[in-house]
Length: 425
Image 1: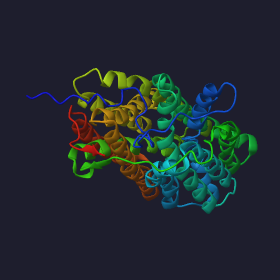
Image 2: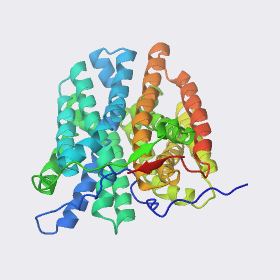
Image 3: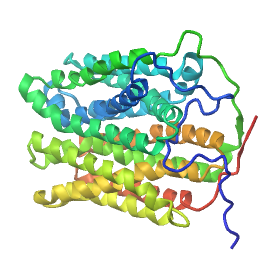
Image 4: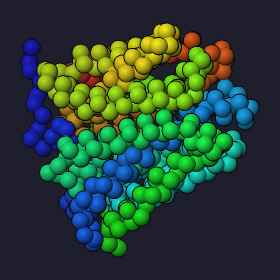
């Protein structure tokens, strides 16, 4: 059998961030100028703190979702939309991030992202269905841009510490999700209001604003740049397998963020413990997403690890649905190991399947845009099935179906091949 073609020398190194909104510019933008003492340390701390805020909106909502549905008299469809539409915004608004970054500068856009996350979370202080949905969607749209811009800033400003900063960025991302899952219920009990508990997650985003403000580039520093054209990506089967794998693993991830706590509460687990279980699952995601890429790149291809990680993620969810309650901690850990590995390996596949950095940037944009739109269907289906059946047992077929298709896509995307496109200047 003919061996697969090697990656070009221009391919981005493994372990570095894989999404760079300004990677397609020529020449590349300079590092962030910081007119304050200890500037590089400030940039690093600010990037990590921004990352902390990119998942809190999702996991905080799931912790108190049963209370919200009860107090507002929401039906299953609305509850499903509350967990789905913010995820859908991740896909719909991601394509705007590179254009905004090239026009205004990534630092200015991230500043607006922080403001909108804080505003969206604060809007949920109003105990109204429209405020709940609107605030979550506003924050989701902002987070979509943050998802795309931050890893590129990490790679641009810390080229000599990319692996370290990527690890810190990822840990902060998962740490924010874990904190929101575990602390929202205690805040609800302390304030006596789930709406105030949700709005409390505006504070971490607002606190980073003064830290990020000095990082704005000088006036006129941003501008339009030439972008190489990537031809044929949408017609390439391998690109679609990578995209499908990204989207389906995200569907599992946001089903955990949106529904794991309600699933456990439906089984009789008290709200505080349910939130802590989700935090444990996300904590294991942090460890797994740091280890899985190193394992993935050691083999000739990634087919086996893709399927194994899908099996872990689905088995953990099934165990949380049906296993004896004392075992929920074990299954939450299993789910976290599988889910964290899936997220990291899905991003790694974008680099491994791309012949050069420009193709990697375009494939990443395709995978995130289409993938997150696809991912939004997972939480929606869970909400619809729960509303129709009055329980979560039947949702096991959703998880098994998503897992089966994700495993098939992962087996295809894991083959040691390159997408058959090139960047044309």
